[in-house]
Image 1 (tube, rainbow, N blue to C red):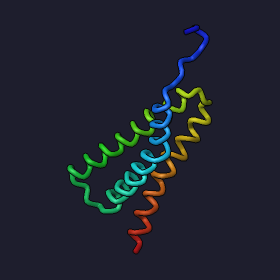
Image 2: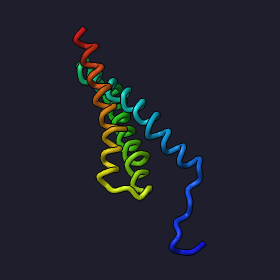
Image 3: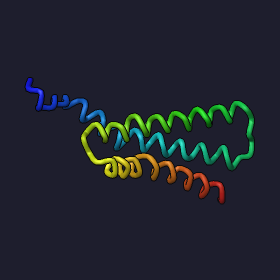
Length: 107
């Protein structure tokens, strides 16, 4: 293979990365936002609940960075485009989960 030619990515890799970005990451982040807001609102700050919330937050950060942001950078897109994908696939679903918890808490 010539050195100036980039290796092609297998079709399954593209499908898998898009499935994570469009389905798995938003679902996980909606639930993470919901349960994080539930923890904050409840006021029951026991060590088991705190450690679960910290583990969930760490997992969400790793998922967002490794599987969404870095994957976009690996596709040779601009950092601004990678940040916008991170916003739409991760940050907005997380905020939606928080919003849903607050709405349910008010009822």
